[in-house]
Length: 95
Image 1: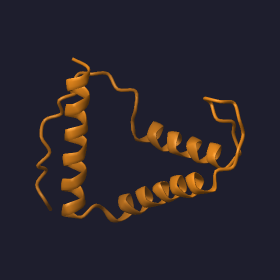
Image 2: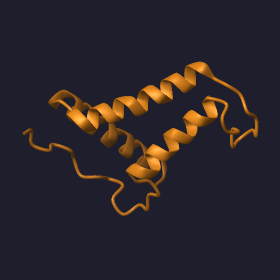
Image 3: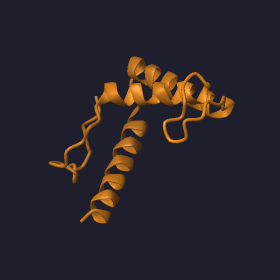
Image 4: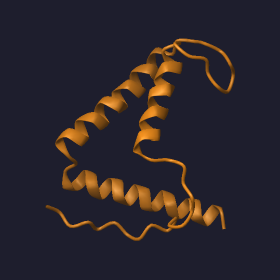
């Protein structure tokens, strides 16, 4: 098993209102809006967006597959680096 090489979380201590369950529900809600099964909360409009619906459903499917089969070492490093860099950018912009 690969050693965890993620750097310290620069956003530690910043309250975050997301966990895996809320993330999955958020993607599911986005898919429902894109399918035209729910109104867009920003506009109140109901419209079918085929490409966005497929993309969001595919993202959920990919997450399901990755949690069943795990990430390979390159995927772990990529995800770790991306999250760290994005967190650093966020912290730098919110100082």
